[in-house]
Amino acid sequence: MSKEVVDQLLTHGIHRFLADGVHYRDLVDIQAATADWSQWCRVWSEFAAAAEERGDAALRQSHTRTAAAEFGRAALYFHYAQNLYYDDLKVKRKAHDRKVSVFKRAAPLFDPPLERVGIPFEKISLPAYLRLPSGRAQAPCVILLGGLDTTKEDYMVVNNLCAERGLATLAFDGPGQGEVLYEMLWRPDFGRAIYAVLDYLERRPEIDRSRIGIIGRSTGGFYAPQAAATDARIKAAVSWGAMYHLRNLASVPAVTRDGFVFVSGSKSVDEAVRFFECINLEGVASKIRCPLLVVHGGLDTITPLENATRLVREAAGPVETLIWEDSGHCCHDRSHIVRPAMADFMMRHL
Image (cartoon, rainbow, N blue to C red):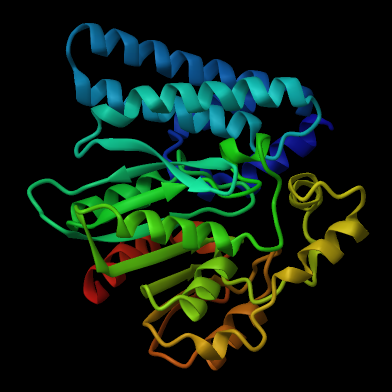
């Protein structure tokens, strides 16, 4: 792909990059340094490695907060290096593994720290990070669920907002996501992984099992309301980029469409369309009785506005909305409003 395509991707995704923690100057320099798509992973990885080096320097001087921030930034940049990049799977895997490795270094340095845990799921263990608020026994907990290209490591902005409000968090990779992608592809019954997470949280004495919520981003905007409808242990849910269905998969932007094909192990777009027929809240949304927050943009090219309005209309419990007709997918251009509001929603209802 040409430089023009790279510029288009960076320009289109600027709100998400900045909202997740990419520094603006770095983004400008990354755009200037990336001559074409073949260099995407390499350039992002170089900026990630520079951040990790700064983290090492800070750690040698016992500046643990700075080290945590730089290691976290490195993980985020390694994430975007391999995010939706399928041209060279060896290069993708290398960037992915470095993301996982450097975030492991960041996790214990954050305040409060993140504990890496494994959640039993069939024959594998789902990698996750549990974060407990300081000085609070049996805290309410928010499950942080990603989507096609969102993982436990790049969820830190929302994670921090929850921690600031005294909420515990558990961010995990499910089938076809992050680390699990290399052990297990996406599954039509992905929701079973959420039940496994709930089972795990019930066994943690630091968590109040009667106060568990879930925030689902993008594709997670389907699985969060699905979990709320089918498991009474969910006491509050956020559909962040509501996905009532994915029948429009064939017409979503190519790089995203290719991602859905890849994570499902499909051989073609048509096969992926059939696979993701499992994403459908018809007959399910009406069973949601816990408080629900729906966040959506009217210009969303991945999940159309009707997905949000139908979910709002059919949910049986109390529903709050943050919907802008001139906003895009997950309203990243309104992140300064949306992300604190989601954390506040959880604080109110848990």
